Image (cartoon, rainbow over all chains, first blue to last red; front, top):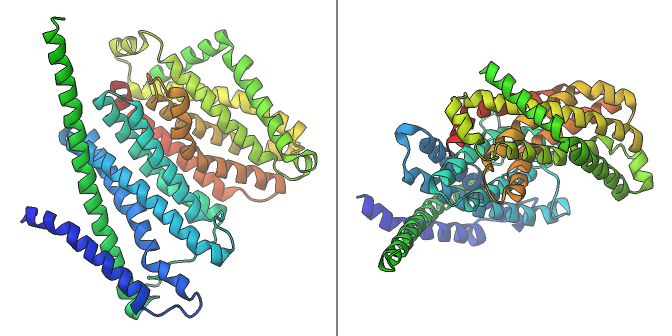
Length: 238
Length: 219
């Protein structure tokens, strides 16, 4: 059952993203105010959901599991690094699609908006996490320090969010659900958005799985290289 | 824990007092950075734009990086970690002690650079005095954060370049909150909401340090 689901993950992801593209570009009508520019709404919020909540959340939970002695395992560490790397890709895509929307709407590629600024800071956090891991050769030290930094990043997220929100914001409010619980988007637009969310969520899990496999292979390669070097030293009689 | 914190803070401050590294290297760096900031703005804007609070915090963030680097470096000396482990010192106490020492150092440097901001960037002395409690709280939060990020790079060959990458994103909300408080004080406005950011960050970093510093020492 699990194996079948894993096999289906790639094709279903591709199909849902293709469906989002078709609905978003050809089926849904242009927006009354923003015209074709509004089609970015089928992509941008879904990318942000994966970048800021799903992948960062996964990395944080995996890091907590790694630091907790009862649940400590190399699997948790591999999931954390894989999720953080995927998060960085999605953060960059979120910023790029936000800028493409911002140029005609605000007149500039970059505005000192709360969400833009806090997303960019989170991107630097993700970069720093990967830099920290590259700086440590010892696997245990690398995993522990990475886990601590991921948790520090997670507890920083609300502080950064509120600081930049109070500082200045231009970003539009909630597009789908208002604070009163009323739906703001309807019809084919809403369905396209929902399929986009499903598609990008599946893409996250597919990328996470592939990146995890790479991490396993990398660990095996490092272990075999060390074994080979030790065997060679033995042959040399050292 | 409190006793260990007091002893570690005393040890770190004594090291700084004897070596005078902060006095002869970090303070001149901060003063020069403040002057360069004024030069970058130009003669007109540097004196009248109200940029003083922002530039003060920008320089203090850079100074914090140097001071946190120095504080973590002290723990890198040969045998220090082994001694700490042998003595069975409470890691939470070590963290609090190091954060306290760094905080005292930042307060001292902040005082000097605050005077520089009033003198060179024409920020009103009254505004600096009104903002001084928020400056003290922001520098305390920077010290706690700096100690924690410094510990993440302890024993690493590339610590000098790694620390800024790790710490600067974490410092950003403190820079915003500190600058807003200082600017509000200069304009005679209320600073209430910005205090929340500073105090929450301070409590969060202290709590995280107490819980996680031991994990970093083990690593």
